[in-house]
Image 1 (tube, rainbow, N blue to C red):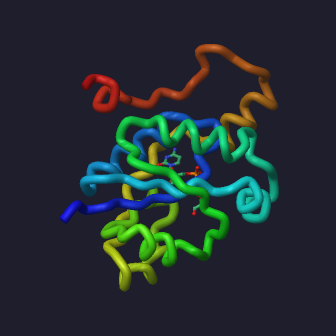
Image 2 (cartoon, rainbow, N blue to C red):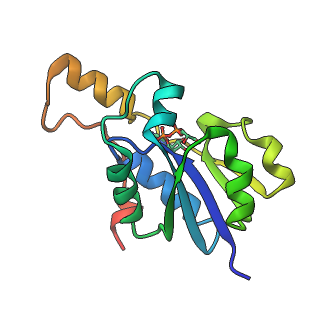
Length: 149
Ligand code: C2G
């Protein structure tokens, strides 16, 4: 049977930390499905709108090679339902979420993979707000394993 992996995220201002997370998640099984937080959920949880609206964020994530399918995640609390509906065998999240989803281990395997240091949507927004768009100022993040295929 195919082993389906599921993950969730906002994926706003999509960056290589997001890409590496998706690659690491996909490597845990045969097929990766991704729940993308809706604008309303992001507003509720983060207290601000995402920069890019959900249809843009979903289109970008759906275009990533290792992603089989995307769906909107309307409510943070509904992960158990998505896991069951999609028959996922593994939930993967970055380790900034370590421990948060352990209760879902009764439904599927729960794995936290290393978060990529030095890059984040929040830091990018802050840096641009502070210094304006600064070409060449992206943080150093090794991506050789992803692009050299
Ligand atoms: N991530 C990462 N490295 C980064 C930034 C993010 O590995 N430098 C991972 C996060 O750990 C998460 C995923 O990428 O697993 C998506 O991160 P966000 O877009 O910040 O989404 P988040 O706010 O964590 O998810 O149900 C979860 C919600 O949808 C919100």
